[in-house]
Image 1 (cartoon, rainbow, N blue to C red):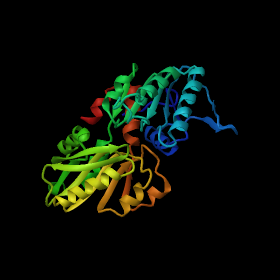
Image 2: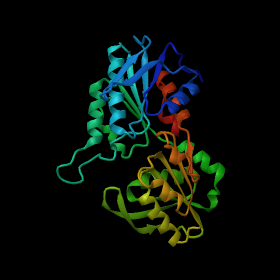
Image 3: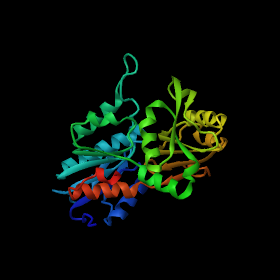
Image 4: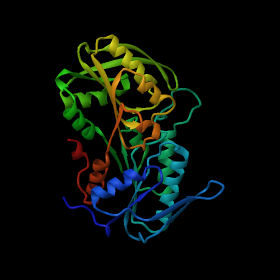
Length: 318
């Protein structure tokens, strides 16, 4: 497959995840483009594009993960600098879409920040967005520009096929909202499906209540879009073990791992936790032996290549 040349595209990286940006450029066989990003003494962000991009299609790799406000603002400023440098097009590659969990009003007088972020990106001058495993698929509808919603499923399922006995495994959704995601994994892996019914008490705290499906005598694979504090995950592990699961592992696309997540995982009965490099892992996470990180750079690189060649993106996941 022919990749776009350095004359056709420029790929820039914010400071949120430069390792992923370099991995993408390595996959495409191009150089990471030059830009200076620094902060003034008062914390304001300065960006200077250090090469001509007039008439060039540009891509900015920047997950809006912790610190989410700094990374989001940095992305907006990079986009503004590219727009004022006469770029032909600007695609924001946002592997992890911050503020995505606030995608609707669940009570009175609260914001819908997923829509606010969409408006900010569009107003800044973004022409297209690439993101991965959104917390809610309807976030795509908040944009009036092309949006490519990617999935880490091919990378994760390849690993599971190689390292797990799938004949004795069952895919588990940790809540009703993740059933569609878990069903897609179960179909791709040809395994059974189970669902944990939970009731959320307050933000970052939930109580698992019931299990739908059979897990006795099987290895349970919990599938979610992200692991944040791991509180819900550990509750799910307890339910599965109580129902006879021989062992439990978990997979997610976005390893947020905030708060006491690493301590909870380390002291739990989880045999393994898989995540991807959409978010750079903190040192305490990389030192947690149970956590393994897979790279989604090949998927993002192939998406960029297909966009440049005007080819189908959705067929990557067929």
